Image (cartoon, rainbow, N blue to C red; front, side, top):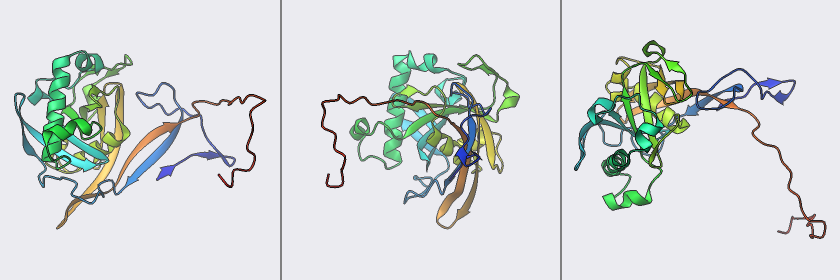
Length: 255
């Protein structure tokens, strides 16, 4: 559900809402992802809030694996030997780290039931995502913005299609919101623990605030809706030029 600002019956395109990772400010679009975990299975596919994820030749990690927004594997940065303040070049320029994250992703996908064998991971590159998190720390973002520890509840970096993302994917932000709202996940604990309905997290380009309310029943954990703001504006206007001697089909009803 998107709440789109209107002015005199027209969509408001301009505004001063600045989304870190997007070049220009624009109108704020409040977006609610209704029932983001309704994929036909459990929000926590292993049945646990935290699992021991055994990854041969890499290590054993405490991981929260969630299927909300998009299937995501969350691991504490310290367990990986990282700070949680890394930027794109720190990971994407290191072939060893890229290989480690892909191995983690493959074994996590198997444990989550997304694939039947490790070999199938190569054919399912888009999910699950792998994200590493840490408690709040100061850092300098890729946009040269100082992020203080007091500005955020936690730090999150996410891998997408084999690379560290420059900011945070919207669907992964939903996963962060949902995981943070459930007491006991590695995301919730990095944010300070306890019952939470919203967090502000730091990513490579800056910060983002997300919210979610979780509840538990006999069927497991569910989230009614996850909330965040995005920005929307016109990106391009253009024309398609057709040669004058080209036959134009005016009536396409039969095509």
